[in-house]
Length: 332
Image (cartoon, rainbow, N blue to C red; front, side, top):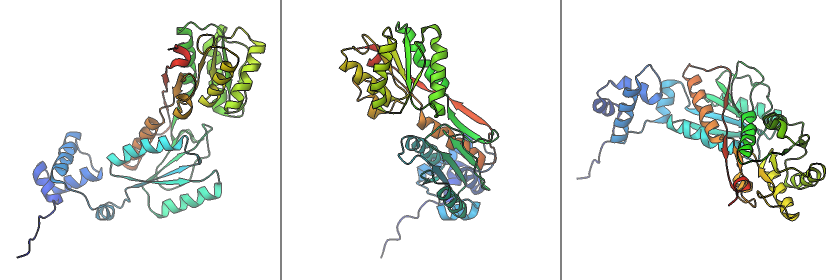
């Protein structure tokens, strides 16, 4: 006689083990209803113990939701959007949600196409991000939206951003702690808001120890090398250089080494971004500022989940950065 096999666990089995009703199990696993966290946890434990897997199609039909979130980005390189996406996925996976990535390539028509497609697919919400911190025009869709890194120009929209001002100031405090008394700053294009914020914060924090004026240029190693020649010609007394990016800082270190200047013995150097490709490959490895973009992605996704559940948090949220001290200021 053929074996009938083992019947897979159903929602009633989970309810029986957790000591609740089947409807309570449904609410807990779908993220609905006003339930105590202890009850939700007990139900999740029971489901895991029994190996219960909800039917996503049935769950979507029953709830009127797709359990999918769209992520729209203008950051084609993925330099900023990938860590944000990874953090968002951590939070969404915990809520049994899927993520659909859409790269607009800075094309407004492509963005509109993706928005229409996401709405037609009945995604539950949308995360909007980009490669620059300049505020962007809000999108108009009938579902919850949260902006990450690139905030909305509408102050009532939910936007999660990096505290660049505090991040830049933290490098100056660190340099003061290690005894630096003449601090210069080299950064990217003055047309970029992040460059202006970091430069202003550095100059303000350094106060009387600031040398000259901030040097604006490119986000490149080439500019870092050129800036060293300008700085040492005009301010030979400089003993520290803060940079608006790790790329610039790596170029600064290369040029100082070519000139026979020790880093950090003669001149300490700091970067910004904690981009491992640059920060760890630099000679020496860079003291830098980590923008904690994965955490930003997690916070963004959790805020979106709250909005989807009917509890939005309007307005901007500014998250702290983290200073990573390494050999370019501490030595070996």
